[in-house]
Length: 330
Image 1: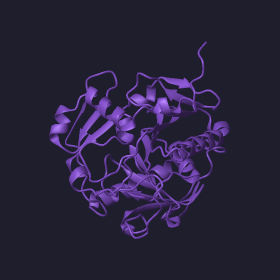
Image 2: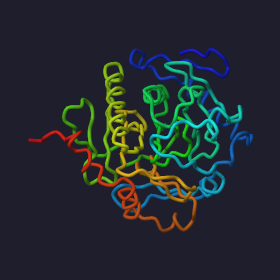
Image 3: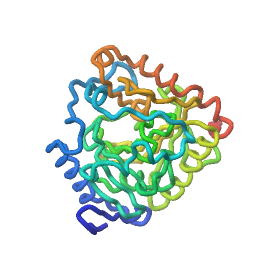
Image 4: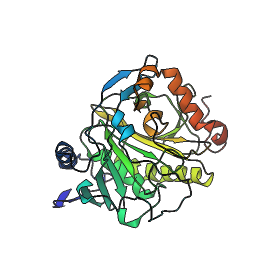
């Protein structure tokens, strides 16, 4: 782990080196804060007007961030198999002031500020930016998500991804890095082992969302297996034209514990036509609900959120149980 240039940074593999990297975190936070405080690159200054925990057993966090709705770039409309279109906005066109770091290993990855942030230090992770990949997740994208969370000493950092047809707003491969200070239900969610796929589990039926989860306990022995297993799962969904959202999180925000990589498939793809106050994307599926209108903030209940998530996903288990069956408990 060494700084090779003021704007480039190199990571060693977490499968051979278990150390965290305070310098990486310092660079990401300082480059974000300098731009945010100076008003450079951002569409607005992050301001969470109000926040609350919804009554119920899943402790949904609801925040009011009006500017995220009114000031953000309008989302593009595209489906799962849409090719990259260089004529539309993509991350090769961003202002150079938005670039925080260029990670040169384990694969070239650009870190950009998210100019319409949801949380503090909300950044975009763009694997192989010059390669101009569509918003279908690649093996490099999967790997860098794990590497970033394994390296950052602060375990409140999470990473999320929306595929085409699952609320992705730009058809250029990117993931989201955010610091979320509140525990979310997915960190403690009950998991059921899936038969035939090592380290893969399914979320229990009583939970708000339907999905699958790889659990990483020992990166030195399990990281390669988890990355390859996750890619196989994503490819199986793409073959069935099933859009999907992903979320990486530690189970313990203080000590780390286990690293969970959650996958939330969708039976039917959605098309983004305009920014709206409430979306069922990776954050909402995991228990973090950012809304842009006061009425939504005041009226949203756990029941209403769960209903919206289930309508967005459809009967995922009914479609996939034959492919990813839960192991027998007998």
